[in-house]
Length: 125
Image (tube, rainbow, N blue to C red; front, side, top):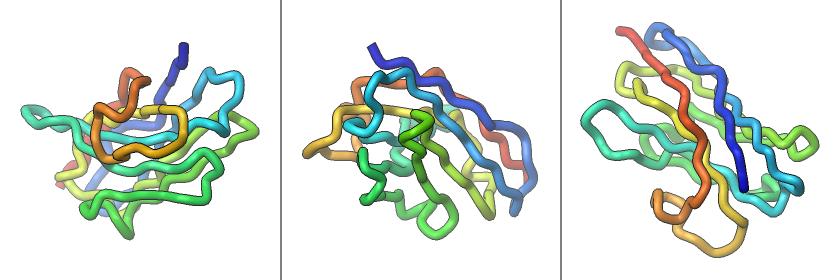
């Protein structure tokens, strides 16, 4: 079973930066694609970013493209989400997700079988 633990959330002001991390308890990390999703109050969980097992391919939601960067360290079984120029509309619980890499619809929650418990990000105006 894959266990994912997110960290790095917090309360920041608009324009600030935060770096989220997700530690994965996976024996062999690089076969797994990793993703970040977020869920704001009263809204559905939505895709933010994803990265292939090798790290060579990344995907971003249009709303975060150019501001957020996903990366991974396969030696440390971790994935990061660097969030710059944060906006109040980025406020949400951010979830890390994992799946065995391959062909999948990366932006749908159903494509990801394993999830962390989430970390709160609050951006004040």
